[in-house]
Length: 443
Image (cartoon, rainbow, N blue to C red):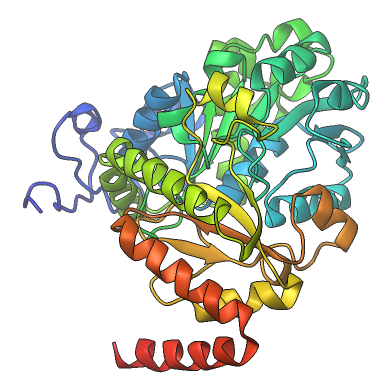
């Protein structure tokens, strides 16, 4: 790495945040004020600048601007993880007595947030029967604060009709929040199709190397908060915690991120460290190239599995007979994502035997890594859900979620092939698991 890129700063140099070349790490907790009046103006949100790294940091600001540009948004706020970003995205516009309407195909921890944590705060979450726009529309009422979907469901692999869901949300005067982690802005920019807020787990494809947690909320700047002032008083009426400041008056189109930063991040403190922001920026520099390889490898893997009798089924939107193929053509230019789910013959135990026998493919609950990863959702990420909830989320007992990496395709398929062999022979599967563990211990 270049020496200038790794420089550690403890002060504030505003011009450094816009440099197109190196991104210094501003590893500092707080920033010196020019005077008492300067500090007062910063805390009153009357002046631009930095005051405390829980609220903003120059290195984080570069990350926020780059992701906002990639997504076609106006402003962004980074957070310590994707789940923190999602929590902020909702809490910035929700309050007790209101509700959120969501598609049922969700990442397991997102389901827990929606089904258990938010309701404990008085915010109800209504899960639609499907991701169809009509199913969503039936649940929206005068107390709804937003509609939520994952552009590509994890692990269901469903593709949401973002444009149609945006139309439903806007017809009812609420924003559409889209988790775009799986698709990434390289394959899909939801804002181009009417989404108002985009959330990412930067931990996944954007970082790309499985080393750094991070999340981000991107605001399109297009939702007319003032037009729906009664539904969103937290943005359109005076905030007593800021001496009567009105976010829509003060921040204009960036009112939503203004409140996310000034209220949610400032008071709840799930902050992304500057060093993590720096590492995530390195990953973003190669995301376009990596996604190309991810997508190409995933297609080859899906074709291999589809023609293999040891696989009970394969869910891959790139196949013409897949129910989401038309949406893949519309939103992903026909390039299905590298998240592939399939079922191993033998049910729950067959899936676990396959999982235990993997050697090259890592057994992790992450996705979007440069390395190929596998997950058995029924026993890990979605274990806390009931069988009925798992089914609605696209998880069956034998489901294996593959996040196809950028290794040589022959190596990936070779590992899947031997693991399928082991899954068909229970004794061999246990032996393979022992051998794999021993080999891992020697490395």
